Length: 443
Image (cartoon, rainbow, N blue to C red; front, side, top):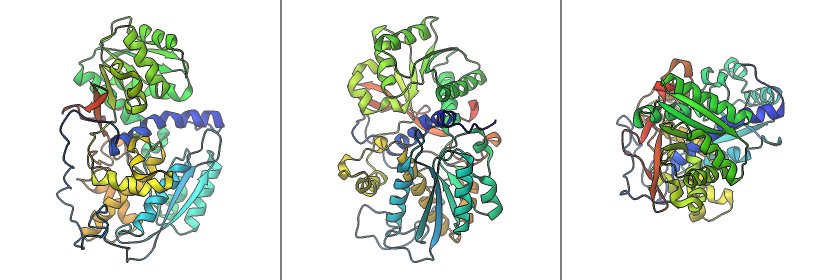
């Protein structure tokens, strides 16, 4: 696919991946303010092949035992390329939250007992600036490059220099097969999961889809339609404006449901979540609806209440207090400028992806070193690519790098699902539809 270089087109293509990106935060952290009607779940057990380094417990009880103090190994230079400073393409929190994580690690265990010098470079949403960043970071001697949000990663420059690349959110088709690793599958795995739930939970033969009519949303809708086709499900897509009136959202829901589909899917977000839920309730519909975890946010549920009945949400994990969540609040509260009790894991926006990327890699680095492998950027890349029993931060989402040849750089194909359970609460689905795999119906 040709990559457009106009700012408007670049932004719309990036938006197609951002919907999926925000789900990663909800899946890893959950919502501090929400509640579950189910008993609190226990923390996922560590993989059987992981061994925690034998170190004394730290004075700071919020830190894992493996992070007893400052790292003692040689300094490691880690780079990050992130898109900032261009209208519509400005995501500084990706860099800021990643830097905050590294600052913490430099006082608490490091990257596999190595302190990190963090070098960042800002791209402006063009191939030229991404290439300039690649050359700059390689020139600084980085051992590892992290991809924040970069539309045009210069994989060739990194490969020629022998520098491994790890990101969290693939954006354009070329990213899925690049010589890199991504800790999520972006839009592709999101729509693949939707098709799985439609086919295997609801036994749907037909689906009505509502979506905004813009280039980014159209790319997401096209992926969903391809996934549904692969699952043998017919569909009708109804498109509206980015922002509609209540009557407009009601009209979209009416049109999508008029042929009595077995299931509805809404690709709207933010205010569109409220509008489509209200339109659904006003029409008296009772057909199930699936949507993204964005629509499970407290800011939505507190407004719509029981109008969210029959709605199911992709990318929403269990509301369980964990050491990971406590640590996230501690690290990011000073960066955001709020108290620790005010940090909401699924309210971090896309900046939270930077944090998840660094802290997930920290876990893999510690496991690798505990198993006797020297901590280097290349070794960490190989360990992530070839190991089993690894999980994304939070311990639920399994890491399966390269499990699908057509998506060879993707490492996670699964995410949790929830539904509206009444009384203003979003609750996790039961297995086998809590952790839903996308591989069968990837577009």
